[in-house]
Image 1 (tube, rainbow, N blue to C red):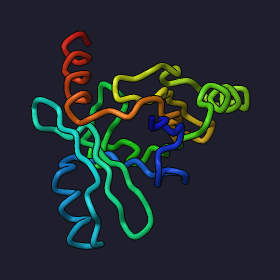
Image 2 (cartoon, one colour; image 1 turned 45 degrees about the vertical axis):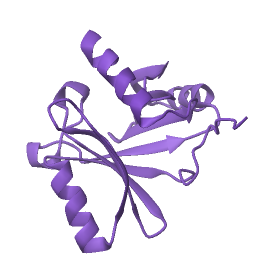
Image 3 (cartoon, rainbow, N blue to C red; image 1 turned 120 degrees about the vertical axis):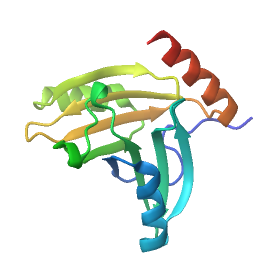
Length: 154
């Protein structure tokens, strides 16, 4: 049996997570401009991109359309365009250490429908950090079912 890895393959570094208006167009631009390869794309029912991952060279970049209700605001709207994403072996310990060092909790650590245990902090300098431990490997169909159930109740 294949054991889920707490840090998914290829996700061992700090990963920039970009917010933009028009994430689909941004992905197309990065493909044309930098030879990016699209690894995945997850769209909301309205077609906006909740999450996508591209690879440029050996680096991974995550991106999404803006979702002001979650604090994800594009630079075109005056927001911070970048969150930093980290996969770690123990999200709870890393999150606690960051909060003890002065970070402010924006979203407490909880198990998420996409298979990660995840939390969000803002550091004392205003930068957002997503911290996660991967808990489950999900098929695209299972992810879509969970997302539909999640957004039907939120």
